[in-house]
Structure formats: structure tokens, C-alpha cells
Amino acid sequence: MYKNGIKRVIDFILALCGLVILSPIFIILCIWIKIDSRGPILFKQKRIGINKTYFNILKFRTMYINTPKDIPTHMLKDPDQFITKAGKFLRKTSLDELPQIINILKGEMAIIGPRPALWNQDDLIEERDKYHANDVRPGLTGWAQINGRDELEIQVKAKLDGEYIECISFLFDLKCFFGTIVSVLKSDGVIEGGTGSINIKDK
Picture (cartoon, rainbow, N blue to C red):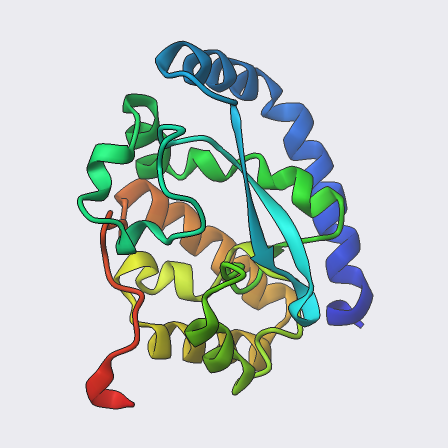
């Protein structure tokens, strides 16, 4: 009952409350991003949603507008050169993810779930299929995010997503939620140009 109904209701209510409460922070960040560099405030990117459907994820823009598109940050050569001054702070604090509250309200995402893969991350999508991790709404944060984030190789990340699928419950979501707060405060696992690729030796 929780997985198929209550979870979505809780997500909608919390996202709506969050949007209202955090609106002053949204306004401040929008002004900072606009002053800091040329380009739009929000960044849209095609991602994989529930049952491998597509949707556009929303983030505060953290990179210059000449950055190559649809390429994971870790695959860019010297990714730091593409990140704005405001973007470095937003990424370190994960505040760039706040606009995904809108994705949650629209039903494209959940608060807790596997992080949505890029539409062209075939290796990650294929690995997640083994654990049915593509069959649920992707999340703002999840079990893998409090166990390594950017440090995780794809096989490990997909396995952790599978563990989440097996254990979905209100209490487990709470554990992920509060674990995320701790990880963000400690900036655990945030590596520009980090891993997130297939380990050839394990294939």
C-alpha cells in the first residue's frame, strides 16, 4: 500500500510544503545565478523516469552555457573549468537539486528513489534492469546517494538501487532522508570528475 499509493501522496504534500517554505532561498539563488554568469537560471536535461520513460529534470544551472550537453560531469575533461562560481557552491551543498521539487509535484520523481540516469547512460540503465530499479519513480535522493554518491562505480550503484527496491517502506525512506542530510552536511562522495563508470575488470 505504501509503495503503490501512500508514498506518492506523502511526496506531493512534502514537495508542496517545501516549495512554499524554501521560496525565499529559491529567489536568492535565482538572483545569484543570473548575476554570476550569462544564461538561464534553470537547467533542463533529458533523464530516464519510471518504466524507462523520458522526462526533463530541473536543476539550478551550475555550468557555463558553452558546456557540452548530455555528457556526465565525470566524463568531461577538466570539469572544473565549466562550473560557475555559484555552481561550485550549489553543487557542494546540493542546492542545485532544489528545482526537482517541481518534478516531484508533477509526479515525474519521488523524494526517495534511484537517482534518474541520463537518457544515454546505457550502462547504468542496463545494470539497473537487473534489479528492477528502472520500474519505480527516480528520486531526489536515495540509498546509493548516502553510500557514496559520485564515488560509486556503476555496478555498485545499481546494486544499491536494487537493495532500495527490495526494502521500500516508510521507515527505510526516513533512513534515506536523514542519511542524505548528514551526507550533504559532510559533503560525502561529491567528486567533480569522479567515477560512476563500469569497472572493466568486473565485467
